[in-house]
Image (tube, rainbow, N blue to C red; front, side):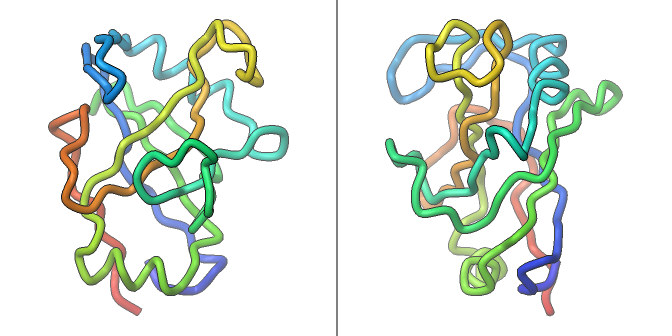
Length: 144
């Protein structure tokens, strides 16, 4: 991926399993949950920003999720990320952020734009912090 604002990159963001987020309560996600989250995503109505860490305000946005796709063969949820800030792309290329952590709106959350399904809230890029979801590929943006 280049640092151009209109470039898009596909990254691995989640997998099925039981994980314990920072809040401490374990949550299980099935393949069906993740496929439903990908199908429910609507970037026009409720876009998921790319942020650093997990800020409570989901800001600032360094890029935006264009789409999510469930790959049943790989058993991974992927995000197509676009409108990427060039300086953020450069920081990722230099290795400042190698891991991602996807935050969801819970199916029963009043803030969820699609009640009943897990809905992508933001994609947090992590520096030195370990993500709750292990086993995902490191994020890489191609040079220039």
